[in-house]
Image (cartoon, rainbow, N blue to C red):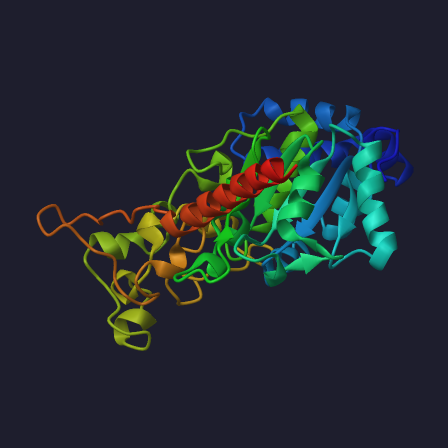
Length: 352
């Protein structure tokens, strides 16, 4: 559980100097495109903050989001859990199980009422509770119970943010995004399959530093990481402008590093920081490794018409035609679920 002392006191006990603390704040500030003076404000805010209580729920997902989190390198996963946050509940990382695990979740909710953050990965099935249950409770019920007194909800990964793969056509489980079921609470979407670890840790650090969520775009994503398209920052863009495109993954153009647009790259319509933050400690990202962007941080990316099908282009202007965000299936499933809830409530009243 979250201790009473501040992060500055806690880190001092761990031998972390103020200089190292300020260096980290500067790194996060630059990562989130904050003005130069914000680093000192961030360091001051972090120093006064207390470890943030976090409850992490996993629903219809593949554990890829947690795997991504374990790859974070500044802070490391160990730093994040033991120094910056109090991860009170996490299906994969927690040592407790059974009744002890559920007791830890409820105790954290009670002790940190109105202050804890709920992180969720995975979509929520709404057609039948049996598709996914935890400790005998449906995902819908566990989500509702856990967020009741939360300060904010962070949906990590495309499944939580938009419904993801479980919500792909024909969406047999009635999978919906977390935001479809959360009302009256701020929701931050950090999409990606998986999401960038820097986006997850950066968002939590911003919340700790300033006591508020970072600036979000129209899809509820932190603008620091999702304001520009992959295409905007891609090192292959000069080849795109010159009309030099690889025709296959093993032709001469591909070996020369030409643009992968004609091989289905979704970079022009995908907003994420992969091209700048990169993966595995800044080693590479998919396009640098020779594969086009699959658009995994956008709504309905599984139903975009094929990973290797080129994007549609306006023949007159030669510009890429944006893919509609849509979300009809997931939104429809959520509406149907809520309608069934209202019908059940009405029937219960009539029976009473």
